[in-house]
Amino acid sequence: MAKKTALVKIPDEVILSKIYFIRGKKVVLDRDLAELYGVETRRLNEQVRRNPKRFPPDFMFQLKPAELEVLMSQFATSSWGGMRKLPFVFTEHGILMLSSVLNSDRSIDVNLEIMRVFNRVRELIIDNTELRQAIEKLDRKSENHSKNIEVLFQYFDDLERKKKKLELQKKRKYIGYKVSKVKKK
Image (cartoon, rainbow, N blue to C red; front, side, top):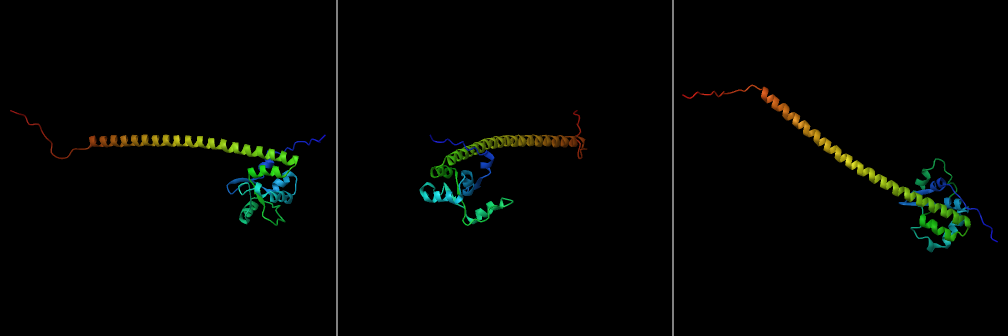
């Protein structure tokens, strides 16, 4: 009988901390994936190189030096020493494809965990988008109300000015000819 291994459970926070936003895509570094899968980075990349058709550019790409520099600057202490090659990064689809080339129970379990986290992130983004849109709608309404209130105050100010002008005209002394009523005989 085959030995059943325990399901690998990686905390969501650990996986989330390894997701980066590069070139407009959510990606995970090859070294982080290798760590999660419990394999060496070079072995992971070896399997990728052996299966190039499974990893088109929208599934996996290699970082440019400038991108790596920006990524490294995000860490206060660097443990990036000894790197000879620019790392590969994998999109969500690339990570799914990795499970087909890394044929172990651990890689399957880890992939399931990663996919669940990606789905939760996607749901959070959608929820936040809906919330942002609702806030913007309220903001537009309040902006419209503010404009209406401003127009009302302007109208009241105009009425007040007209009232003061009329009061001043009533208090003025009339200059010039006074028309007297001539009695008819």
